[in-house]
Image (cartoon, rainbow, N blue to C red; front, side):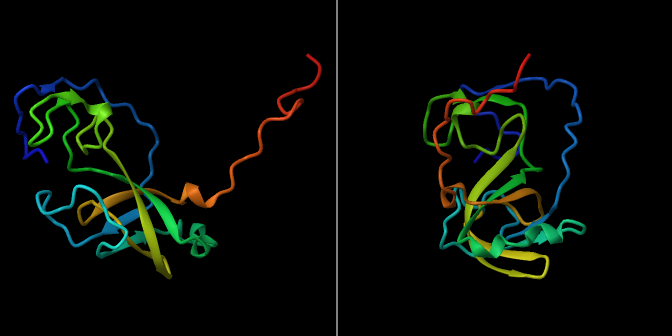
Length: 165
């Protein structure tokens, strides 16, 4: 993990372009045991500590049906991450690599993803295990684990026809 504003040998920071609004809406807040980046695990574990996804109103009704899944994908905004490093040197690695080739939270759009075990749902709070983010992290989205879905059938002739031109 990069300490605050640290630049390691081989790393490159850039001036960020002006922000544009993508219309992102945070749907809640994540509660974890970690308040310090250095104490936070690098990867979540499905047997990790219990964490809480506090879903904001009016999004609580969107939880209907989620209880049928054993695992969920959690997308979150790493609001305390640097965004300007395009080349990074992972600790103890000694070489610099592009931000897009790493799972580092330091990236132009610091979106974190985790596969988490669904422990339960209590009202508008989802209990999970498997996260690797700080307490208070903004929640972007929550989805059933993609592995729980049956793959779509291969395309068939006529599937993409739109009719006469």
